[in-house]
Image (cartoon, rainbow, N blue to C red; front, side, top):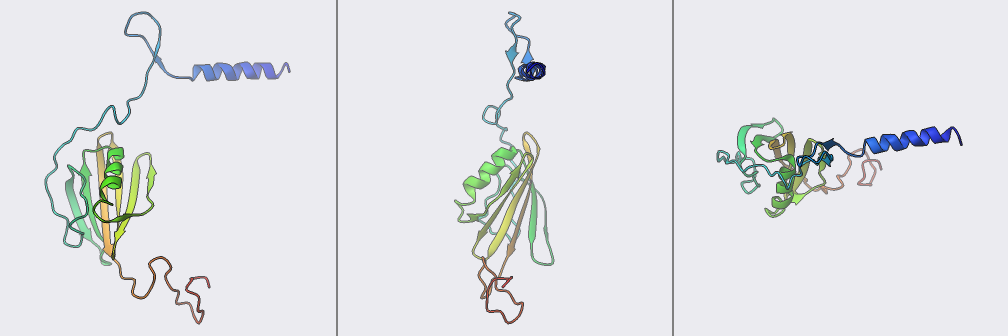
Length: 176
């Protein structure tokens, strides 16, 4: 029990010292106040108009464009994947909310995306079009975008379970 007491006191001191940051009070009372970080709703990014642009011919014309986006470049690979690079004056959070709110309204189905502290992606599809929005937050009010689309052909295959051509097996599963 005597050994546990110093450890318990140490834990209590560490936890009480790490409970928040304090700054001197502006009221002059000498009492510290706890500083809080601004949230996205307290500090929205200012709307800045981008230069209007058109999607390349291979992209669906009704694919939502981020508001205020500026066109950077477009490329089409040998396998017919069209990639458009954009920048916007939106935060990463605002960018993700835009995709979630607008892509389905335009008739596209969103797939399961992924998000990390500085980047997010959202796959989408409609008919024979498959694509992805990739967003990279550069700072609080600046996001780089990569929007890629491709036309796919499933032929007689299911887009969910492609048939395997591994031999005489009658199973449509690739391992069977």
